[in-house]
Image 1 (spheres, rainbow, N blue to C red):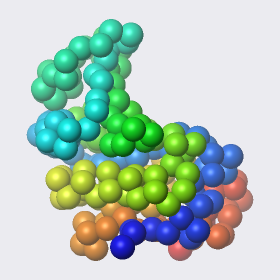
Image 2: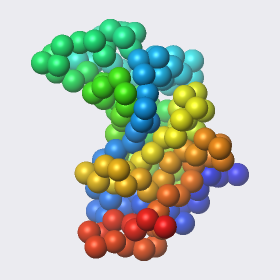
Image 3: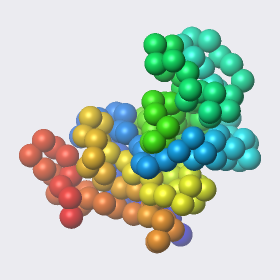
Image 4: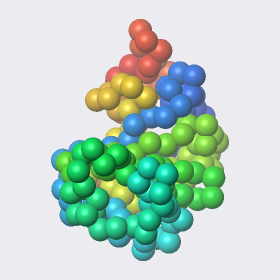
Amino acid sequence: MADLLWDDVRCLFDPDLMGALPDVRVSDTSVEDWQAVLDLVAEKGWKCQYSEGETVFPVPRAEAVLSRPADGGCPDLRVWPSADVLAIFRFLAHDAVDFDVDLRELQGQERLDVFCGFLREIGRRLGKPVLMDPEGDYGHPVLGFDVEADRVVLLADPKAAGPHGEPEKR
């Protein structure tokens, strides 16, 4: 059974309403958590590409990436949990696993299921919530992986629009 039904959450995946690139995060993480995510990507066999600027490199250990000088540019890891769904991890800090997704790629039940499965895998591996905020509205998650429920759940009412077009919290 699907975690979320497309007809119930369609507006949360509207790029015009939510911004095209919502922020997805796992808070209160460590270098070990980052490494667990890198290990998960490898174990699942998800296609990935690590780069620093325009240069592509083999995926390094998390400790090596997170200890780079701040002026070295932000490395990223592109992960495709399916051929049509891309997540871009940004190694900004050890204490939060951050990544972006493009809502234009997450249209329809099939791709929603892939996305929810991706959040579930990360949340289960880390034993922590994985939250999605509208683009530029950090700290106001609309959905996320709930550790205790062991599924992706709504954290905002998708039918109620707030003053800036974002869904209001339940």
